[in-house]
Image (cartoon, rainbow over all chains, first blue to last red; front, side, top):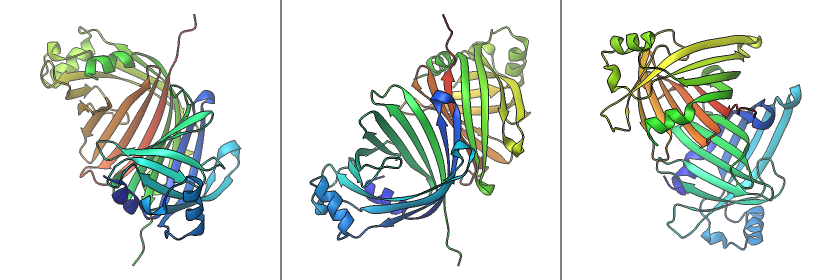
Length: 178
Length: 178
C-alpha cells in the first residue's frame, strides 16, 4: 500500500459508525456520520495557503484531498450535530517514499491546523501520528475490502504511554444505485 | 510475543468497555464488564474433558487459563446482564511454535465448544480465527502497555469477505490498592 492507492481507495462517500471510549471516566460515545472524501485541485486557494503556511511546494504534494463530515453524537445524552470539513495534504519524505507528512487545515477535534507523520505498516495499514502541545494522537486506517474500512484512533498524553480515549470506526462505502 | 508471554500478561482483572457495530442495520451496542483471567491447573476435570474431546494430550498444552466475565449490555434499549466463563487451552503446533490451536469450552456468544487458530502478527498482536458453520470470527488482541489492552473482533460470513459486525474493546487492568 502507498499513499496514492490509499487516498484513491478512500475517495467516495462513507457511512460511518464511530464509538469512542473515554477511558478515564468510562464513558461511551456513539457517533453516526456521513463522510465525503474527494480529490482537491492543486490550484485551490485554501490548499495553496496551507502549503504556504508549512513552506511546502505544492508540486511536492501527492493527491491532496478534502474530507467533509456530517453526523450526530450521543455525547451528553442529547444528540449533538457534528459537521465540518478539512483539507488533507500528503507530502512524501521523498518522491517515492511511503512515509511523509500530512498537512491538515484543521484536525478532527481541533480548530487549529496540524501536521502529522504518516507511514504504512507491513499489512498495509495507514498509520498517522500527530503531536499536539499537550497530547498526541495515533490513528490507524485499513481496508477490509474496497467498500469497508476501519479506523482506530488513540488520544494519548504527550508522553505517549497513557491513553485518554480510544475510538473505533466502521465505515461502509455508500454505493451508487444504478 | 509468544503465547506464554501473552497469556501471562493477560492474567488479572480487567475493566472492559466494548462497542459493537452491527453493520447490516447500523446498530451500536455498548457493553461494560469486568473480566477475570486466571491460570487453570492441568488436573482440572473440565480442562481434561476439553482435551479429551479434541484428542489433545494435556501435556501438549501451554498455559491453559479461564476467563470469566460479568457485565451489562445496552442491547434492545434495556440493560441486559451478561455473565459467563470459559476455559481456553492453547495447543502450539509444535513445542516452540508461535502459532497453534486454541480450544475453548464455549465461545463468547456461542453455547458450543469451539476451536480457533492463533498466531502473532509482526507487531506482537495476538490473532485468533475461528470457523463456525455459518460464520467466521477474527479477533485481534494487543497490549498498549501492561495495564491497557485492546481487542478487535470481526464476525464475518463464512466466506470471509462480508463483515456482519465489528466490535472494539478497551480493557484497563484493575489494580490492587495497597
